[in-house]
Image 1 (cartoon, rainbow, N blue to C red):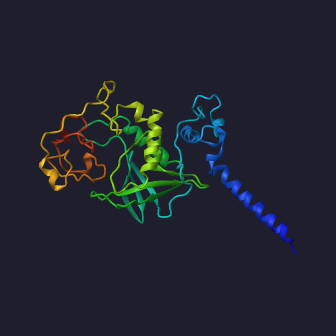
Image 2 (cartoon, rainbow, N blue to C red; image 1 turned 120 degrees about the vertical axis):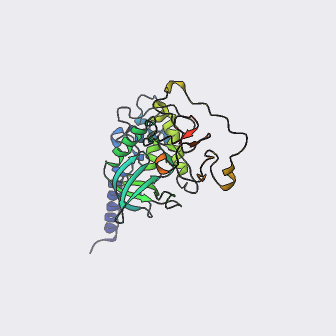
Image 3 (cartoon, rainbow, N blue to C red; image 1 turned 90 degrees about the vertical axis):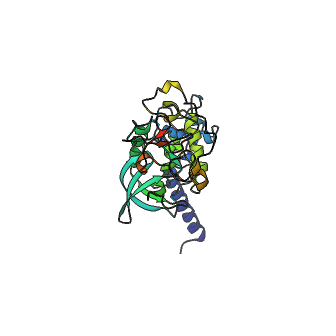
Length: 308
């Protein structure tokens, strides 16, 4: 008959081994060697949480961790598991940096990644915006790494164009999970875009944007941007800096009283609409006033979606 102390010791040893096996890969936040990370963004993000504890990641003391690593992307820093409410999906295609198509429950659905906005690539009237093609390529790369794709709903299910509004998650096992929306912002390929009530992870994505902007990643140094991360067209001289905002009209457009965005006096776009592209609406050649939250007026000439 086993002795009680021996049974207790064996149970403790088993628990310790399980904890160790999880920590080796699933808890790189506790690692102090660059070998535990596969990207600079991940290592730097961990280092900045506590530079003293993770000083081993910055041996030359210049404030940059694991400088030999490629930029890559970082998993979610606030959790090691996909939310229980997220549902599995299969990627069908990447449309652009903030839109994908998936197969879920036997249907192929368009999905708009909420709380982020990436430069436009599908406007038929203008060339792709600065870093739009790069954002699409980065999302394609991230979603090609493997792991199980999950989609999480916030408050709204769909926008008025019948696109699913979701957070996308990738689960690689052993506690390594990526929230794709946040990872795109932290890598500098997307900017924060808030459309209440879908703001569950606004703090996390805002912190990710601060990281990217602070390090001049992606569109924050490669493009001319305004404070919200909106970019000029590739055809515009990027060296000219931020385009100065035009003056607002003295009188509010008539459609404001009916619950429409004042930037678009000729058509009705509700202020609470998720981010839209010209391909999402039927109207063409309509008046646009700043701040033009949907960036329908890519060349800033006051006319939106100028397709013949």
